[in-house]
Length: 164
Image 1: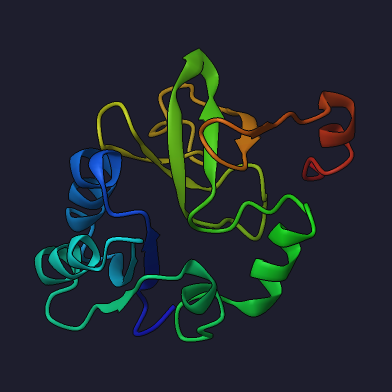
Image 2 (image 1 turned 180 degrees about the horizontal axis):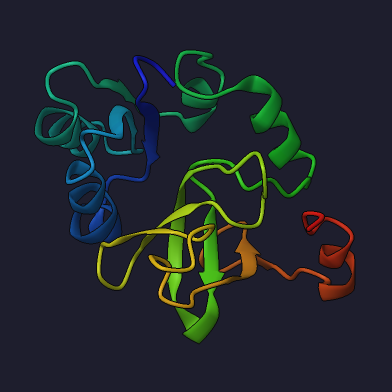
């Protein structure tokens, strides 16, 4: 975070990112800023940086360079993800009840299973810790990517529920 805003790096600046992720994130400019854009096609990353990076977006063609930049990603979190450790850190894709899919935007240190999530369906931001604003949505699953999902053990999750 910088100046109270979440810094976001985009890896893959093609179809889905252009149609869903970057337009949705650009609507949240009071909470986050896209600062890095990576694509194997440099022109695609440059175009995304010009459109969504507000003139300050870094361009990468190798995601390893982007992930190694401590101004963009926390190296501890990157290494945890590489090692297969599940974290609900901003940028993690999740599945919610009703087969909703979303992106964690703001973590919740008081209850890690109730972060702020941006819905892919309607580009709406949900605070899962607030029953009046989350519309009954709950975390069901954490995804490594949209195609390579990590299933959570519901019994293991109960160990981490906050004490009431």
